[in-house]
Image 1 (cartoon, rainbow, N blue to C red):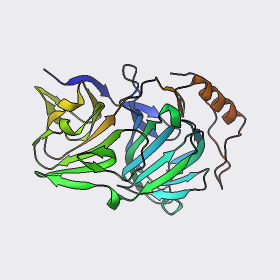
Image 2 (image 1 turned 60 degrees about the horizontal axis):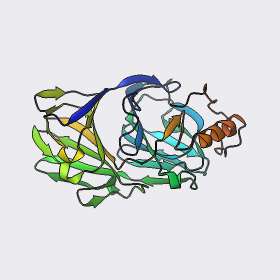
Image 3 (image 1 turned 135 degrees about the horizontal axis):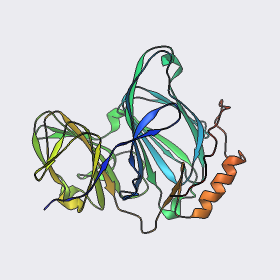
Image 4 (image 1 turned 30 degrees about the horizontal axis):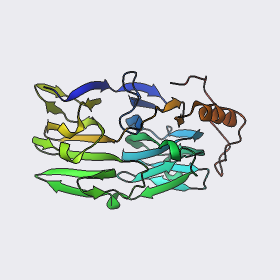
Length: 293
């Protein structure tokens, strides 16, 4: 019997001047544990006239996780943070009651050819922390727990699993794991997982039962403790999930909350431009047409 309850295909989405593959939310699955949003950026080859430019925009009620495979992004936020993220490192920005940030190609790359490829992820905050003060954390690639077992490479990018803990400061029980293999291997990690669990195939493929699954798919498990599959040679997959929240979380644009009134307040505050400002930035992304999901 298959342990897969749902298969989600990557869908194209436009984030201004950049196309991404959207994986969550999905009409049949709004969240996996505390994970409420996943975008796959690229891989995109940008020439000397093309740059990533996402002007200042707000967030509430969540933490963002940016993880790059290739390229570089300059992050600036209303806390005064100005930091370049490079492949393998983690930017973890917690919005809480409200933060504003921009994401742009660094100045030294703006007039040259470059690649951009990575994941952008939102993790909802527990109800009691939705109005916490915003903060920002950066963890370098060499500080992410990494190890090998039977020729398979693992990284614990965020959360806790396998008796290990990532230094990324998360706020609820979760895990975000990278698994790479140069050879075909059986993977059985269910005993190390908990809560709800999803698997994203970045490259290569996996086999579960009699079925083979290819890149740009998320597989949602029926039972995370039964997570077992065969990873084919030269494949990379990501396992994500954790303990789901007891209350529903709503999403409108960049706002996440268990309280629709907080979302309405954020909409009014952004329209009135009373959110904190990003130093050195004058542009902003306008509020889209209202629709709470």
